[in-house]
Length: 235
Image (cartoon, rainbow, N blue to C red; front, top):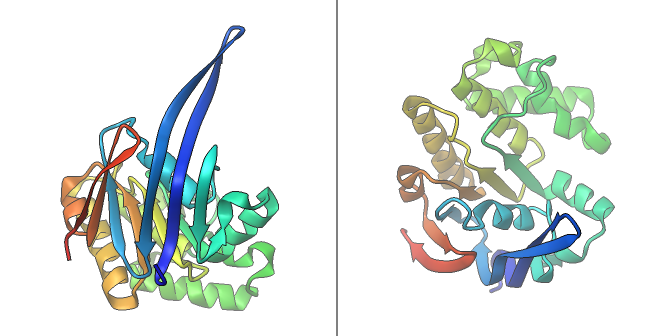
């Protein structure tokens, strides 16, 4: 597909665990292929242990398949070196995890500045301007100088989303982003992701157990035993 931003082709992922002198190989993803189109808001669902997070990590270049290919923006990231992957992730991808992973000694605005300052992608003034802009869009204009321990769980996660968007990523990848939040805070994150997709065309892929969150996206990929069990377009 010409407008496919992410492509997986016959991806196989195995995990080798050594038990004493014996190596036990478990197949996480036996053979999976699909495309993610530019501008799509996609949820990946499935039971625990089905391979959802492994799939997300492969799409984000945080892991490599044993066989098959993963492409991002027509580049085969599964064939890249670690140095090339690090540069690609910083330039093209934004990650949001279940736990925010904010640096506790830095303020909200400083945390959001970090990816822009990495590898000299922006100067301090430019990075601060963008960080303030993003945090204001997240409804945190009055929390710029707060440290993570001075923020609620939902506010911390919104800072994490702002940080993930700092370098204008092609794709926002999120792994259970509402898993640690109460229902009210989770709803704020749902609405935030939907607004990003609708207003800016941001491509978003979310791994979630939350059926309500999944139903708010535009497409649901359901994974069962490491295979694509269903692919459902919602709009």
